[in-house]
Length: 506
Image (tube, rainbow, N blue to C red; front, top):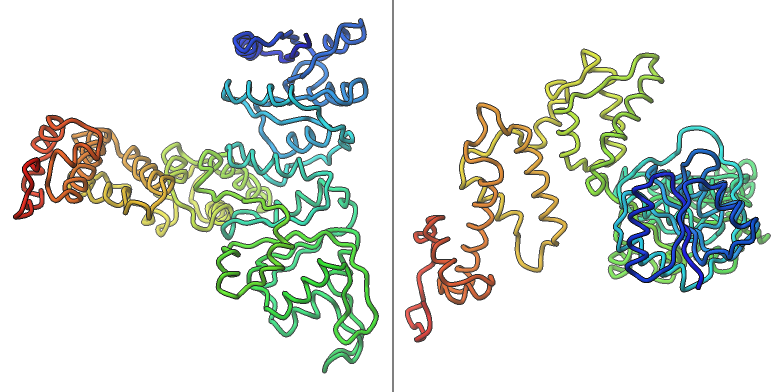
C-alpha cells in the first residue's frame, strides 16, 4: 500500500499530520529534510502516493524539492505548505506543478480532505517555474480571502484564458491583472491598461482600435489602438461595466473571431491579445437592465476572480499599513513612521470604503502631516476619527439600538453583514474598555443584554406577545423566556395580546 510522505522541519506539524493520517488509516512516513526524501527515492524506496512538504526548511526548500520530484516522478501529487502566505510562493508552487497550496495554520480536517483528494487523482505535470524577479511582491495579504486570490493566480499562471475581476473600487483589481500577466506565458509581451470609464465615448473607439488617417476631423495620421499595442500580451479593460453599448458590440466581435478594423479602416487586423476585464458593478444586474450585452458578459466571464474588500481581510491592515508607510518614507527620503497599538487597532476596525487605495493614501498623508515619528489616535485625520464612534456606549438602550441594526430584517441582511457590523462595534468598545469613561457593565455584558433584548422583543412582536410561541420560535423554554423578560424589563415593551386569543395563548 502506497503511503503519504510528510516533509517539514517543524516536529509539531509532522506529529499533527501523522496522527491525522493514522486515524484515517493512511500509511505515512515523515522527514525533516528535503534531501532525506531524495535519498530515500535514490535508494529505491517505493515512492509515496502523495507528498506534502513545507516550503521553507533548512537546506533545499519545498520548491527545490518540488522541482526535483517533478523530474523524477512527474505524476506525483505534491502539496506545498507554508506559513509565509504570499503571492510569489503560491504562484511558484503552482507553476512548479504543485497539486495544491496549503497555508499555515490549517484546519487538520481540511488538510486531510485535501490529501485524500490528491490520493484520488493524479496531478497533471506542469512546467517548472521560471526564476522570479527579485523585489517586493505586487500583492500582499495573509487573510484567507487573499489566499484564494493567490491560488487562482497560480492556477491561471499557464493559461491565457479571459478573466473577469470583480471587486470594490480601490481593492486592487489592476494589481491582480498585472499579476496574472506577469505570471503568464505572455509575461514578456506588453501589458496595456485602459479605464473605459475615464475616456469620452467619442474617443474610446479610436483609443481601443486605432484609426486611419482622415477617418475623422483631426485624424492627421494613422494611429495604433490599444489592441495593437498589446499584441502578444495582455489588454486590461478596467470598469468594463461603463463601456458604451456600441463599443460593446465591437468588443464582442473581437472576442468572437479575433479580428477588428481601425476606425475608418478597411483592412482586417488579427488580434493576439489576452483580455482581462474588471468592474466594481454587478454586471448580471446591468444585463437585466439592458445596459450590458448578455453575450459579451458571457464572453468576458470565462473565469471570474473576486477580489475581497479590505474590510473582509482586516488582519492584513497592519502589514499593509507598515508597507505603505515604509514606501511613502522611501519616496520622501525619511524614516518610516510607526503607529501605536491603539491607532493600529483603530485602523483595523474601520470600514475603509475606499479599500486598499484609501489606506495607501492615508499612509502617505500620515508620512507628510503627522507631527512625530510615532502616530497615535489623535494624529489621524479628523474625518477618519469621526468615521467610527470610539466613545463607550452609555446605556443599554443605545446598545439595543445597535443590536437591532445588526439583526436587521430577516431575509434582508446577510449573516456576514451584521457580524461585520458587530465586529466593528466590538473593536470600538474594546478601545475604551478599562478607561474612566467606559461602561461599568462591561463590553461582554452590555452586548449580550442588547442581543437578548432584541432577540426576545422581536420574537414577541412577531407572535403578538404570546410567550410560548415566541419561546418555541427561538428554541428556548417557557420558563427561560419568562425569566429573561423580567430580567431585561421587557414587560412594558411587550405588545398587547389580540382581543380574541385561543385557549393555548399566553
